Picture 1 (cartoon, one colour):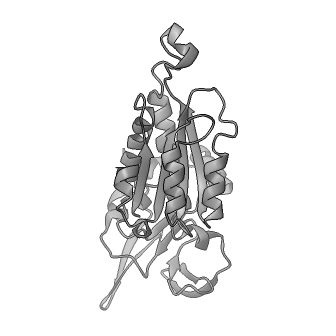
Picture 2 (tube, one colour):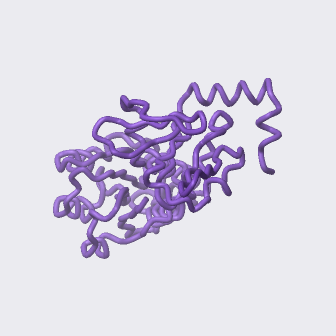
Picture 3 (cartoon, rainbow, N blue to C red):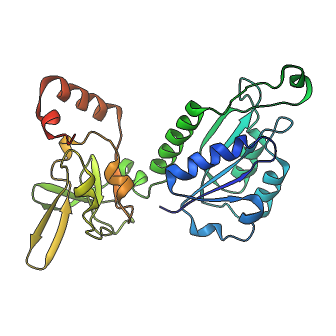
Length: 271
């Protein structure tokens, strides 16, 4: 998945720290507003837009950039750093402009940032040392969630689909208007776009994936998906975005119960 983080950070570097943490998590291109003006955003699957909050809204340069750019049908999340304890309605103006452009706005993030303006000068600044390590950790968790929400199989996981064939006791599904063949119900694997790089097999601690060969055909299947612990290692390492872990509350309960009553999960886990 190709991602880009576009930001403006003009004061204490607060927003730049958050943007850098997000870019590191997504392996995304990190650019300033000025640099983004010369980039074709249609090439990206996920776009992040952020700035500090200035006078109860995002920076004017960011708002102008949104007005001048095409975000129709693009997966976008927004973020900010702020002085006050609560976010309130600070994101409303940017959100409204994006939605008016037909954007898929999939999430928003904000954290406190160091401020040494106005009355805060007398106490040498407010929100000292923010954003801190915990703020940046939360930023990384947030964009990991955004990556899952923007995944091409996220919609498929919740759509009505039909069984088209069966391989090694694994059902293969298709959804209306979708020519891809998807294996599995928990660890969804697009066998149409899979490039057989084996990274899912190598990275999965629970040995969920296996390769099956017949004549001249090679297929990777989530044979052991019942053992999936939703760690996302396979999805993160897949270069063709062919894997999507369908995270649900019930799957979480299933994992917890199996850990309590069975040593199979613990025995399978690679320490």
